[in-house]
Length: 460
Image (cartoon, rainbow, N blue to C red; front, side, top):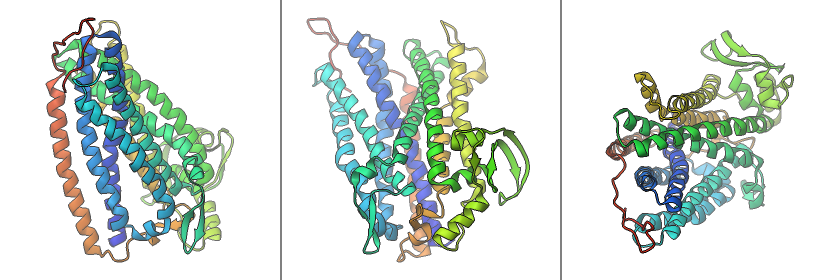
């Protein structure tokens, strides 16, 4: 592999790794804020214990997410300097807003939440976690706006051989951003709900703290189901926008080589190694046409026709992404998300009323739910980025032009190895801390009361 390939592997590994923590942070911050709201409104100790338990896991995840996110951004200058010079004026604007506004908001108010338990009035303290949660969502919006510009560049003009920003409003209201943001946020809640479900199931299986973890399990399961439906609806909208803007990506997602009306969607396909020949498949009639166009009989453009059209528009070259990777990442994204919803539905059914599941396999499935959205998110990003190839900015700037000319193959390999090892060490630390505090269970609290017999704040 040359320096460009190694740089792509490095960015792919660090991006997927970083996004393990992002959805947990976004979703769990809102759920913790909701639990604390329940405590402030009712004064019930179980909500305070749940707040402090899930809040500690949220903080561990947030800290590792910040570290991995900072390292990730340095790669734009190290490995992708040509890209940074070409698009920095546009791409850098939403990232700068994210750092100066959204991240400042979430980090500042999260600090107030951490150290304000015994210093701030309960309602003021509650406002800090809600503000931090809003900050995490704003961070996601601005970062997704930057990524969406790579998928569908708007609000720019060419000047001195580089893209120059003409409208920050156009960038922030990009049609791609407007469908990507709700899809991502609902996926974040699905991920956080699965975490509540899995950890709670582990404790309940061992007979631990039924007053905290049984409600947490059911809360997590409901969040998974509701957020999962949100993911399906927003994903459907996103697929249609994607088909309009990047038809090659949708064609590659189905390995569809010829223009087809009433195109079916293959749940499972066995084909040749290069993805050019289908040997066996299980299909749902007309589903691909509905996903792509909103019409079951609509026509979906195929890879061969799009290749010819792109070559005529952009010049000679191969404009077909890696079809097997695109095809399977799309299905694994959908499949793991659907599996999480199925397990959540089973968990709600078998814990209705005062029931408790007896099947060992159901408990194992419930604990394993935590991995499903994480895998779904990872394959979703692999599909999004690999399906855009050979472009870094679709229709404007190619990946082959985006690397750092001064970075040698040896230097790129060193960076890849160092960051992979570093992230491996961070993974050991993260998993160790997470398992330690997750296994410890919710704290036992003897709250003090004021003259009105209302709960006071507690030190973390």
